[in-house]
Length: 371
Ligand SMILES: Nc1ncnc2c1ncn2[C@@H]1O[C@H](COP(=O)(O)OP(=O)(O)O)[C@@H](O)[C@H]1O
Ligand SMILES: [Mg+2]
Image 1: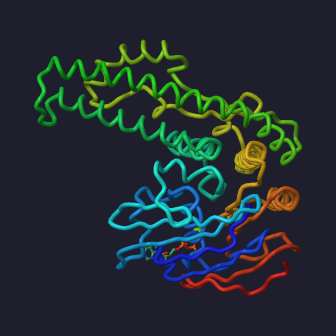
Image 2 (image 1 turned 45 degrees about the horizontal axis):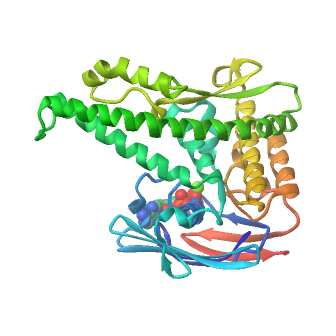
Image 3 (image 1 turned 180 degrees about the horizontal axis):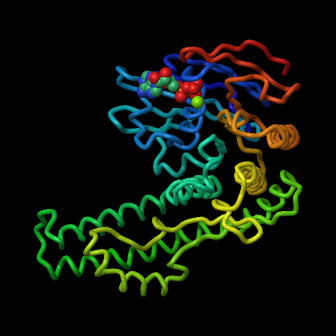
């Protein structure tokens, strides 16, 4: 699959951009602050209807403008579709071939993008929240309905936390104490049901990913070290979750927040049994993430029968020479269409099948192509 054309209006500093990327490697060179990440963020947006860095989509609208608009023509198995996203007044509108898409999950599935940013490289040592987001992005790419499940879970979690505050008298409610406690019981049960589904989805994703992750890690490092990745949760089964919820209710009431559930879980990476965050070198940690991304791409390629589009945001500058050459060797052998940004062209070890663009003050111009 490939993006044949992308038109961007008023996304961050991209005022009016039109790119026709060829099938293979698209390299975007520019100094810092010129709009390279903005371009990748925009491609991710039109594929996934989300940002990989902003928490609110309204941040993506160019300052002083009422609306951002992105349109992409995507070719997939000989079929061309027109994907469009608009952001206005903090709301997003998604269209395929000019028609509003409802429910929004129908938007996903055929237009798959995998993103790899320097922030990802810090995942093994980062916060649990960052690891959950990283994992969730991957799971969502495997199965778009996961997003709706996560949305439902977040809604119940917010409601439960609200009731905890009402009980503590921190917010004014209309219900009496016993009906609040009855509501808690309902929310607990919903949280357990939806939360267990999230945990299962994450675990089954990992079960599929990990063999590929280990294989890729070995071929990057060639040092015989064994990488492992385990999902850490106190809610391993529905029963355990239910017991945990009952046991933590008093604590939750005192803290007015929910202390148990997939929103508190974590991923643990180990190298030969040692916690990678503490034991591994910087280079090994990056190799783990690189291996994860390679495994993620393989998984999508296997399940969707197509190579996803890859967005690489200035990753090379964070990798040492040997990992960087592995990355490009890997890309040359397996990748489909790629969007690669860099501040320095010399990191990009590609000779063939590449088009070069310059990014400067939010303008993007083709400077060279050998495709
Ligand atoms: N909402 C916005 N409106 C206008 N400009 C923005 C907005 N958000 C970010 N920018 C600008 O985008 C630029 C950063 O772009 P970015 O893609 O991160 O750069 P880089 O090329 O280093 O990846 C900055 O100049 C910043 O001022
Ligand atoms: Mg950048």
